Length: 193
Image (cartoon, rainbow, N blue to C red; front, side, top):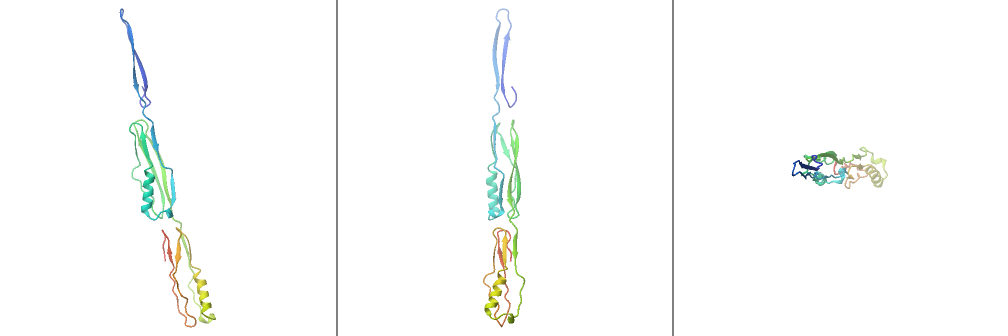
């Protein structure tokens, strides 16, 4: 019989003798190696924004890795080494090659786990502004101009980035003054001020 695929060979032993001729048939069988069943996860892709931190990415990656399994064969075993999950925020792709070791049916399969980088954060701010108190008729006009200026602070992109400047107050009519506004951008991956 053939290695791995197995089979049966029948042997007929013929005895030649003048008075007692005979034959006897015997078989020698090798049972084929069991099939190897390899299970693998689908390729995976997710946004960095879907995770709160590197720990969550690592946990998702380890759950995905656990889907690589092998059974059957001649005590088949599988190994994918020590792959590392992509990095939080910057993202990346980890290719995992699962090597199945088996006497009769060795194989390899490669799958990928991708974390798409967080989108860039775009922060828009107004230029510093300066005007004479004489350019306004009253405090209401200063407040209106100040609010129009504040509306130029915007943020977009990132992991649903938000911006906040608190509750700044416009300078006072006639006496003037300067109001400094700090715009704080909150984003999972790209916070800034």
